[in-house]
Length: 105
Image (cartoon, rainbow, N blue to C red; front, side):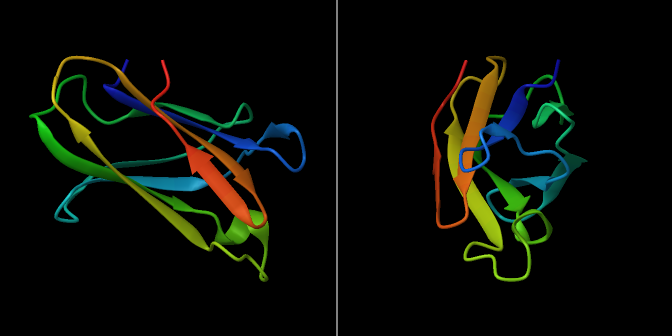
């Protein structure tokens, strides 16, 4: 399993958000991996199994999913990895005019 995984749930529809493209990057913008959420709204194989401690970010391309009037056409979540061998799950709860995130398990 990759060190970093994500899950996007559409709280307005009450279901997983499938088909959202996600980029995984170093804090400086250097690409590490990319993927698309599956039918369960998850990406389980986003990047390597270990990473150096430091700053990273996930960029969610929500424009296509939310449509042409998307208030948040993309979401960038910046986070820090201090243990480069511990699993880091970064879920997103998404709705047309709001989103939230947290460190999951």
